[in-house]
Length: 261
Image 1 (tube, rainbow, N blue to C red):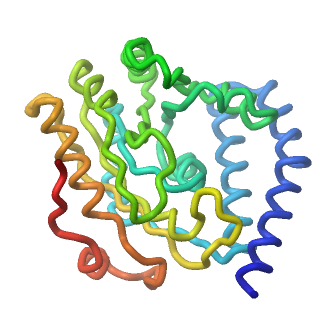
Image 2 (cartoon, rainbow, N blue to C red; image 1 turned 90 degrees about the vertical axis):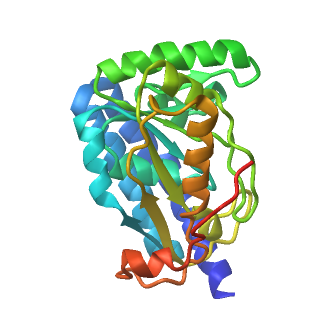
């Protein structure tokens, strides 16, 4: 009952933010560019994540934050599993300048999509795989030249916690073409906020950030397999871990070896 009430409060808060605060912030983004615009998007994401913390009791913690330094040295392809909408908000907060690869339909959502368009995403038509791949390659090169990393969710959609969807190879093909390193990230947000489910589970979401995987020394298949193996092996299977838990304690909760076909 308490979980239901907290989930309802969270929903009402999100509705208020979307209808009242988001239009105000959208208007400000029309007038702002560059770092000012980025600051607004980070602030908006912090409001949403903060309300999730207050309303639903969902917080997050990062393991391997020191690996973010590599993104400041040169742009990477950031490859992550995708379980809920929360990672897009959290990643906006914690990562240096970046662009998401996403389906173009998201740009048509009132307010949200209009603001999203200014964040320089790579918006693709997922039904046109061949041209989508060319678009990712061309625009990723442009984003890299601007100092932006590119985030790809290779599962292609949000996948419920515990389910496995093979990683699509497109992002890895482009990483090889551009000789760009891959930074793997694993997140277990699907336990707290499952796709399509109203009820939210309180607890600590864990984001694990790995060291870069150099693409030049691996084939596309090897790069994809190694990245997927790392990500699947570092998804913490519970929210019930104290926030100050050490990396060693968390490692004990994850699989040391995951078979990827």
